[in-house]
Image (cartoon, rainbow, N blue to C red; front, side, top):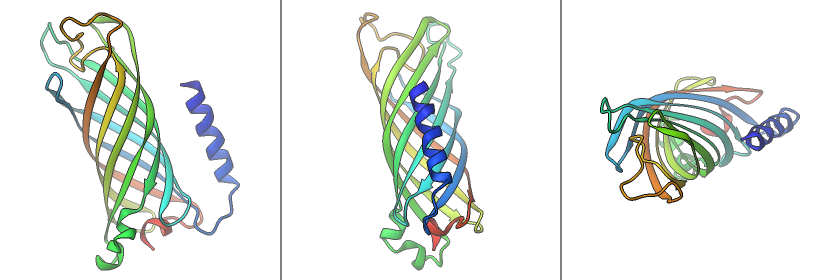
Length: 205
C-alpha cells in the first residue's frame, strides 16, 4: 500500500510540471450501491474518490479509492468493510464514437480498467483479508460547465486471493489458506471537478 501512495505522489508531481497542450486534471467523488452475488449481499454503503489525468483527448490514467460497507443484521453473517486502491487506464469512448458532437457536447462515456489492491475486514474474523483485484467499468457523463460534470459509474471488481465472503464469513469447508474469486458490482452517482489550465478540454472539446 505504501508503494501505491508513493507512485501516486510521484505521478502527481510529474504531471504538475507538465506543459502539454492537452493536459486535463480532474477529481471525482461518488456515492452509491455495492453488491456481490456470493453470498448474495448488497448495501448502499459504497463511495469512491479518484484523481484523473488525461494524457490526450482519448487516453488517460486515474488513481482511485473505493469503500464498501456491508451489514446484514445477522449474527451468523455480520457483514464486512471493504476498501480498494487501484490504478486504471481511461479511454474516452464517447469521443471515439463521436458522441460529444452528436449530443452537442452534453453526454459522454468513459471506459476504464486496471489493477488494484484491497482489504476486507469483518468483526467476526480476526485479521485482514489482503486481496488483489482487476476492475473494469464505464462512466456516463453529463456536461454542466468547463469545471463540472455529473457522472454515473458502473464497475465490476474481480478479487483474487480473497479468503472470506463479503458477508463476513469464511465459505463452508474453506480453510484459512483457501482462496476464492470474489465479485463486487458497484453503481454510483457523483460529480467530476475539472481543474488546471485546460479544464474539461479532453473530455468535451
